[in-house]
Amino acid sequence: MMSMQMLKLQMKVMMKLNKAMLYSYGLHIGRLDGFERLIAGIYGTPDRVPVIAQPYTYAMGMHGLSAKTFFSEPRPFVHASWNMAGYFGIDFWSPVFDFYNIELDALGQKLIWRDRSEPDVDTSDPLIKSEEDFKRLRPPVPGRDGRMPYVLESYQRYMELMGVPPMAYTCSPFTMAVLTRGYVNFIRDMRRNPAFAHRLMEFLSMEVVVPWIDKIVEATNASIVTMSDAWASQPNVTTEMVREFCLPYIEKIIRATNSPLRTVLDTASWGERSVKDPREVLDIKMAMMVPGNDFKALRPFFLLVWNDDYEEIGIPSMRSYAEENKVCLLLNLRPDLIEEGPSEAIVENVRKLIREGAGKGRFVLLINLVPIGTPVEHVHAAVAAAKQFGVYPIDLDLDRQAFRMPEFTPFEEWMKKEGLPV
Amino acid sequence: MDWETELKQAVSEGDEIRADEITAKALEEGVEPKDLLEKGAVAGIYEAGRLWREGEYFLPDIILATEAYKEVLQRIEPLLKSGDVSYKGRVVMGSVEGDAHDIGKNIVVALLRSASYEVIDLGVDVPLQDFVDKARELEADVLGMGAYMTTTMRGMEEVIRLLAEAGLRDKVKVILGGAAVTRGYAEQAGADGYGDNAAEAVELVDRLLGVG
Image (tube, rainbow over all chains, first blue to last red; front, side, top):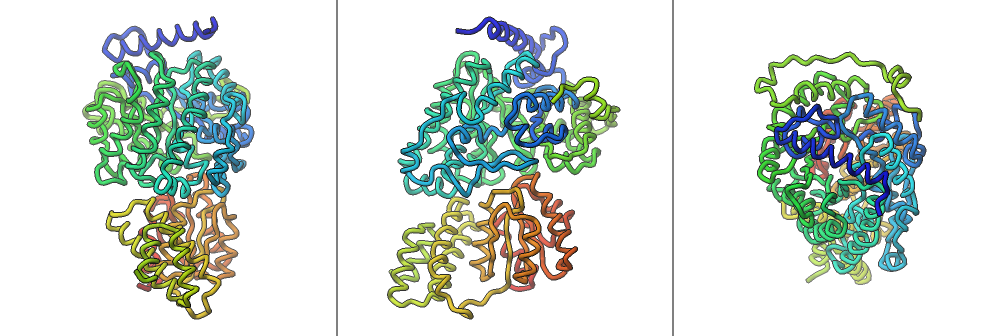
């Protein structure tokens, strides 16, 4: 049964969703806040292109936190992320921890911890070295094992600060299979022992991912749950492998966990440039979202295409595919450009993304990774350029607009006035 | 089928169990380790590389082929006599400190070995100074570094700086690769070469060393 606090939160979110959706269809009732802008941008035309970010290790670096603190203590993790997003004026962010590792950690997979970067799976020591290891494996107790309590508590703190549920993250079962078996072993499984590969996928999907999503939803009432699936990418695996060993389980998970007010989807894979016909990968991405999600017209689907792919294939073809399929196009800003700059190059890149991608709406710009040590002016330039160039309707003469870099307060000063303690 | 055809096929098809069995049987029958390496394992990995370049093979196929190749090599390497194999050059290779990813590196290692390079694989998460120490100790012609994450990529330029500091920069060619690395970064870091994908590695090293 839903608590009164959760019920109030749900009502508030419903009102925001209604306002944003009406806005996206042209009925403007007041100004949009960042969350509403994102929703309006997913469904149609907002006031301007929404900019969302994953604060992640950049927030950690800005606050001088160790990886151990950032990735295991909810308060400094959420506060540092909140500060990063607030300082740069990001429209929407969600707590982004090392989401590929949480279930693995809870299962007992060994991780490598370092001072200044996210923990990483120890690929030299995979959890499931043999079928015997698999037989002995027990699913984690959702919310109790590993760092699952850290995730739930972080989401709780986020909701207290933001007044909306987070966009929740889990690891996809396919990527989890690769990480627990080791890449080469799982490739061998799929080629030579498909029955075992399917048993592993079934276990990870229905006994690890589904209970974990249920637990997250119980704690947060999250309306969007994304399973991240970096390993379902080309050329690391073939599209046939994804169709046989990944998609059926994604659909099962979606059917087991979605509701009229919740969208569950699989995302974050890439590889359009690595196959003969990029649409083959785009079709897979659609199949990672849509099957099993009823009420499709009401679902916030987004087609995420990464910079290496859209730079090689071209943004216009991605845009037209998204339009054909009536989904929002989500493009990231390339991390090495943000890091290296100069600001002028970043601004021009944002201008190009908006000129070619923004269309009449259903477009979101994602700052997925800002490498530690990146000058803050680079991030300010990216956000300011998106806010200036991204105003709808997009200026047909966008190239002639002179960019105006706003003045910004140094982070230390901003922290004194507006920052949360970490 | 004769052992030569069978071993070549087992390696190119990525069947490490069959490749090892054929190798063991052939050794029992008195086949020279050198022949097993050149006519079986190397020929097999070369064939896999060819099919990959022609678009017949996908990355998982080439990965399994390199695993089969490694299996054969593991069995016959201790049996090779000095002078059995002549190399075009010596390559020291690894994933930089903080980076545990090794898929791309492993492919490059296998392809270079198949092209008659002696490759010393330092593995993953290699401390930056170790690259310099090993390059000096082993008198490497080429030092290859891989990075998958932008956070670890910066270590590459530090290694290049350390090489210069040690007076080795003119003696060793430095090549970079990996998901995080771009041609622009490789140039900026002062590398001699960059490979966008593993398949380019052999051609790149051949060119840098002036061999073919």
